[in-house]
Length: 399
Ligand SMILES: [Zn+2]
Image 1: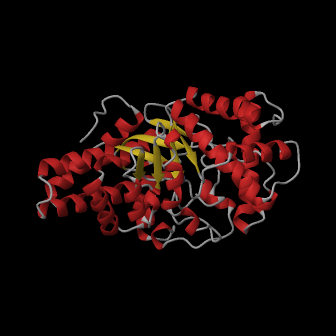
Image 2 (image 1 turned 30 degrees about the vertical axis):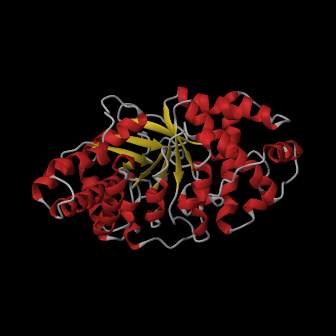
Image 3 (image 1 turned 120 degrees about the vertical axis):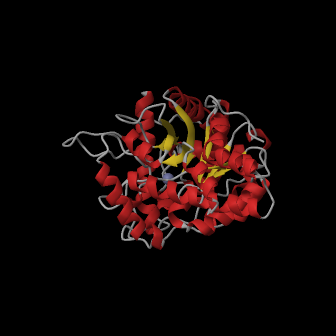
């Protein structure tokens, strides 16, 4: 790696597009259970990629280094990893996680799942526990609004629960909303028939279990309503898109190409979509989707899964075509006592900086870009693209 470029990259204060930091809670208080709507520990045992396992040397040393610092607040962990702002994808925010260092990304799958998901949840051992969590979360959202039961019609459901929940999240500081739908179903949010969606809703709102095709028609409709409303309110839509997690997870169901139907909906062009985890490992599919005017991708999680050289190849490919759509992210998560979110943030950040350095060095040496452009691309990926996307002060539209 070009050493002066390496130093330049190391000095950029990053904006982490996607992570799950924990609250700063005093010992003796109940544990923080809001860091993920669908936590991995709810799933049956699964096989993880080598670099994501607690015994991997990168984790062992990152755990040692972060523990030794004994951070007194979540922001100190950001300082240590060279992160300026972390987008916190959580059910709620709280002590230690506040702007300007932490910005909220809420969860919205629950709004797409108002009916009895018995048939859906019976599909695999993974989905069995996950659907119940979404039902609980929808009830929490309804409780927050003071709504006791589902209204009788779909239009009223959207008017009294979906839109007010999104407005409430925006008021409480959310800059984006997140779908973890790929844990639950395939990402083929097809062009919905509103008539069928309305019929299915009103037939089952007060009880009974919709068939899987019926429920999908309603979900497809609600996905687009939520995405449209989020865009109207100025929130981006984040979509989990990678081949992890769970032993019964549908790998084919998380192919980025499945999102094309939603991305091609002309009524959703005011909404900015971010392919979270970059669709890894189907990164060429993600590249093609960046040709839509409103599609971005981040490299969260990939910095922990792929070796830097491999991630560098992806970054080089993306940066050659759509440099203003590529975002840095970590997916720092709480993995129990051997995998803290602080250690995850450190691993993913170091790995991403290395990958970016390798990609840009290669492009410079091959005469594809100048040193000046390499430095600009580094700033865009680590910081400026996110500033522009979320309208955070100082973000010039980069070229
Ligand atoms: Zn995540």
